[in-house]
Amino acid sequence: MEAAIAQRFQYPSWIDWREFERKLPRGSLRYPQRAKEEKRFRGLAFAHLQPERRNRSLSSEVSCSADNSSALLEAGSVYPFDEDLILKRKAEEVKPYLNGRAMYLVGMMGSGKTTVGKLMSKALGYSFLDCDTLIEEAMNGTSVAEIFEHHGESLFREKETDALKKLSSMYQVVVSTGGGAVIRPINWKYMHKGISIWLDVPLEALAHRIAAVGTNSRPLLHDESGDAYTVALKRLSTIWDERSEAYTNANARVSLESIAPPSICYLFNLLLFTLMQLLLVIWLFFFVLQSSDIAAKRGYKDVSDLTPTEIAIEAFEQVLSFLKNEETMEIPDGDL
Ligand SMILES: Nc1ncnc2c1ncn2[C@@H]1O[C@H](COP(=O)(O)OP(=O)(O)O)[C@@H](O)[C@H]1O
Ligand SMILES: O=C(O)C1=C[C@@H](OP(=O)(O)O)[C@@H](O)[C@H](O)C1
Image 1 (cartoon, rainbow, N blue to C red):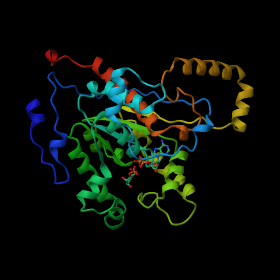
Image 2: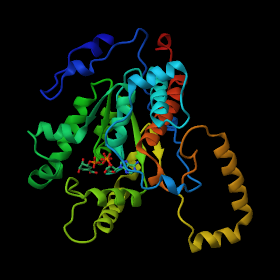
Image 3: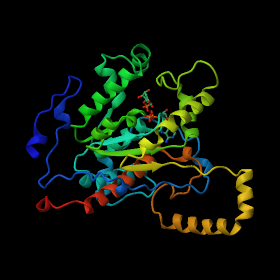
Image 4: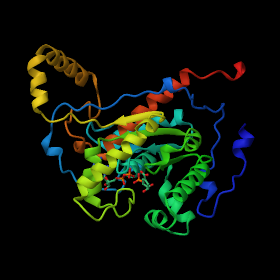
């Protein structure tokens, strides 16, 4: 098995295989258990609005400083609100379980796969690869939008599968996949060589993000006419109906469900089910109390209150949960 893994893969020129070659551990390799029932789905929940956190500016730059953080971690001086340090610490916790396996971020367009993936790769000391970028490079620099326009979606999907196939033999990489990578079962065969994480973001938040940056690079959402937010939301809803099921193939899920603002229904509900609401509040109180680090946890109401670093921390948390579960299900070598 090790010999097979250690064999040289035929990477195209845009990949230096040495960068991703696995440093084989001493013991046997861990492999993911495929059974769906083993998936661990725990999401975030947000209870209280913290207005001062809104409009926090987003930087796609990765700010986690490995050197400083490890020094501080060793010294044991972790500041409770230093997200970067918490992220680094979580990454260190996940690493032994991950055992070099690749991480694939899946999710709808604009769900933050690239932004969060970069943070996760930096924290793990892994390389970051964007599947769309690899496709563009394989097509001699033709952009995704141009591939759709001149060759159609079917060629793009072929190229996407080719790219995922190549990626599936790599280790120590965090991959941001395209939103549609989940629709082909063959792609899951490749992504299941590593660990997949679904960033599940409400469609309204996606539409806001996409409207803010424009739809030029996302041909499936591009439309000259109409208000960008409305067009994006409508298209995303249709796409979501086609894909939502496919996303559940992921090994772990980070859900950014927001609590809807009070509506007539909500108030009506509140009146009719006062007792239920009271029980829910008591449950939420204890839920927040028992949680130690982030979001749900810190009780934000709106998904835009969450920084990419907080989401990356939660992603590690979910992966850790999946991997620990996977380890308990592992069959000892002697039984094979
Ligand atoms: N947690 C977040 N809060 C607010 N905006 C975000 C967040 N994560 C990503 N974004 C923004 O949303 C847009 C899409 O993010 P990106 O990482 O490119 O998504 P994807 O790779 O899933 O398409 C970018 O402009 C990015 O800055
Ligand atoms: O959802 C999709 O089908 C697509 C998502 C895009 O990637 P992002 O999810 O990174 O925007 C890109 O692969 C292409 O435009 C198709």
